[in-house]
Figure 1 (cartoon, helix red, strand yellow):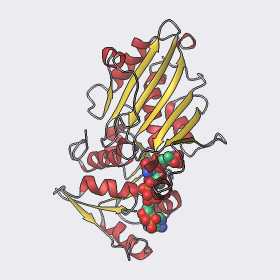
Figure 2: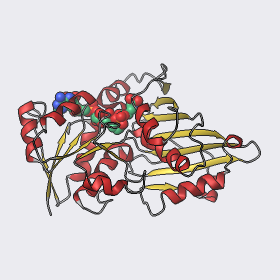
Figure 3: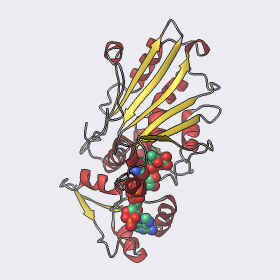
Figure 4: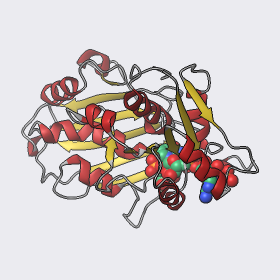
Length: 311
Ligand SMILES: NC(=O)C1=CN([C@@H]2O[C@H](COP(=O)(O)OP(=O)(O)OC[C@H]3O[C@@H](n4cnc5c(N)ncnc54)[C@H](OP(=O)(O)O)[C@@H]3O)[C@@H](O)[C@H]2O)C=CC1
Ligand SMILES: CC(=O)N[C@@H](CCC(=O)OP(=O)(O)O)C(=O)O
């Protein structure tokens, strides 16, 4: 079977990454627009109406407009933007997050790709809330660092301007960020987490950490690790490091999963202090964006789920 795929925003950071993963695949025919046409509404409408699948790699407002342009077409859409991540009628496209989610993605006409920070956070927290190990009323804090490609073309240009502004900076200091609604809604937590993101002067990669006081949750590290391992058993994309593997680590680098589509989870803990750090690493452009979009496309089209992924 051959499917046709249009990447709207295909010249942007995420769009090019998805193109990289799809271009060589015989079962996929890409519908591509040249520089003169790629922002032309008529050309984009035609492409959206001609394609079996469209992947939107656009700013939020442009993604909403693309969905309107696709009205009346049979095209099935994966939106990589933030626009539809908590929108009724859209499936939250994180296949590993819930039992049955793959099947929902497989049958969906509208799938929203998860946010990069949100996916990494949810991968850590959602199985623990579901298992009752992390009480829904626990006041969760999320510390996260991204490579600068997370900010798209504009931030890449800023960091690569030849006069790199900084090695590392925090942001979202007004305690608002576009990923918080999906982090809250899909975690099962009562309250929104306190999200503390930062960006480092390296192109790609991400680490997300959730610190926990074990005395407040009545679960120890083996129980947390066990629940996470059970949640992702059999997945080649989301993996949980065992106790010995974790103990051998002195640090986790931002680049740990860079240039891959993997998401790796580690549970660090000290029984003497009763403290733990849930930690996960991925590539913001890999499982955080393009890798996950391709995984969802594979599921929707009935292809082997990990075809084209960098594992
Ligand atoms: N970068 C990342 O790590 C991640 C990004 N995302 C999401 O993916 C989406 C794309 O992000 P990213 O690739 O980083 O952004 P970029 O800025 O790198 O790319 C966006 C692309 O969209 C094009 N574009 C803008 N408006 C229109 C329009 N009206 N019609 C057609 N094309 C248009 C831009 O054109 P031009 O080239 O002329 O500027 C650009 O090529 C965003 O919603 C982002 O939130 C999701 C997860 C991670
Ligand atoms: C470093 C940086 O600026 N990152 C972006 C988030 C990455 C991204 O594009 O988020 P989506 O997954 O929602 O698209 C930010 O904090 O706004």
